[in-house]
Image: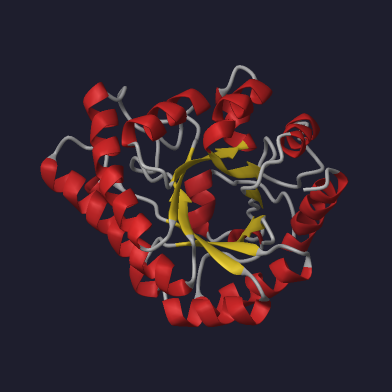
Length: 282
């Protein structure tokens, strides 16, 4: 299996079937075998068409499923919590039908800056809901990957340690951790230490610069982490992600605060990722 993954937003403003075909073609051209397909607006997702375009390009879709305040699976409000579980289960069916073998992202809480510290009850609610979602995913032969993000995108899981705690609390064999170096650079005391902690549960490792632009231009040194993955014979997905105001739709730009033009074309990012991964034999 080609384990290299890249986000479709590297090339396109937001997901559509038409633009997604272009992203899939460019991903394949640079040797990526996986393409991230965000399941944000369910009505805009055409599973059969996505499966067909990915098959033509020779890539496999990797689905993500974001939540909002009215369907936050970590909520202790029973109705809000239920809507979160239902949304994830609906997204799983779409992901299955487009040919994905996993669904990831901030699966455990609403996306966005929170206004208060989460409680143990919020953490437990997320685990209880995700246990149900994981069972549904297992019935489809799929994995869940919990992305660890920074404080401005969630208040629930910001570190590898918290992610390991969540995985153990869910207690399902098909739940993995997704580490992203952009978020790690903000929240972790030690990047290698965080990687080591997550390694037994790691299913997705994503390289993403401190400014979220070109991978070869920034403050994060990926080499020690990539060497560690190689030494550990890591077999999960390795992803590339970047955003630029010159490419992203205003909604996406606002969501990830990508206010600057950090690259004009996604090919530059894909080439950077290709170079880095080739250098480390991953």
